[in-house]
Image 1 (tube, rainbow, N blue to C red):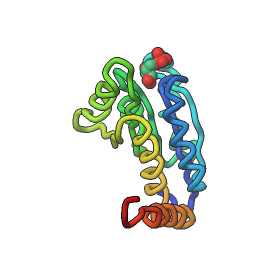
Image 2 (tube, protein in one colour):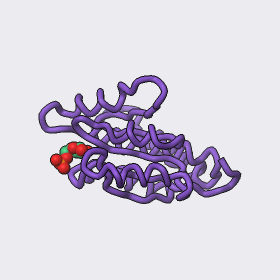
Image 3 (cartoon, rainbow, N blue to C red):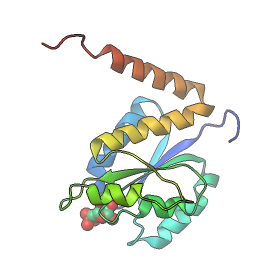
Length: 163
Ligand code: RP5
């Protein structure tokens, strides 16, 4: 990692249909002032696009990849097999199995190719942005401060007693 270089987060997803979930990831990155790009890349429908993307991600200034995928969700694992960048996987809630298929596909990577797996659906999309910001903040004090402020505001917003 180069000192004081400002890295970008790259959000990718297997389909347009994943965007309603993954846009929450964008929203959180915007709140934290983290630079990002967003793309549709499918491991099975656009394998060449996936290969080119993953192979060039590091030299394109990307520090963390967030990949959302549903069903037989091999996109995060396939991308991780093509780069040494950290890859976070967001299991999209599928219609038939409520995202359990996506979760197991993403989490159960065999040893050697890691994917950091988040929760199914919207919680996972939001947490993937927080985790990506945390990784980026290792080398970026502005992002670290933004993240600390967000976390502190969250703590302050929790009431001591229920109404
Ligand atoms: C996966 O298949 C995508 O990540 C998406 O969650 C799922 C369904 O895709 P569509 O049929 O809606 O395009 O590749």
